[in-house]
Image (tube, rainbow, N blue to C red; front, side, top):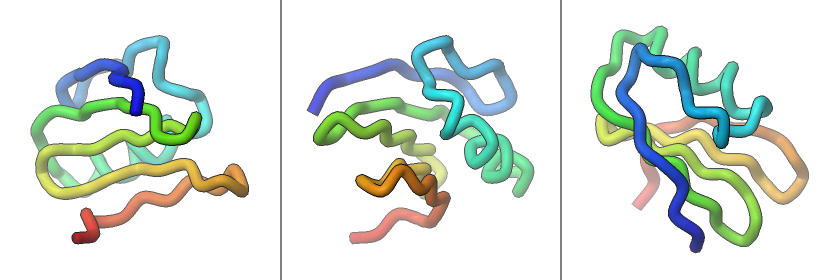
Length: 71
């Protein structure tokens, strides 16, 4: 895993956040959730986790999924 960066909801994601994740991040924030995002890289794919319990992941297929955390 490679650590990326953190940013607050409602602010512009850093340039290191892939363009493919940005619409899904905006969708999650549109639910009224607040907190901080953490961007990491797992197996070369971006993963943005919101400390309010959501994640935006890019699957191996390239598909981007926004979902509540899974245990």
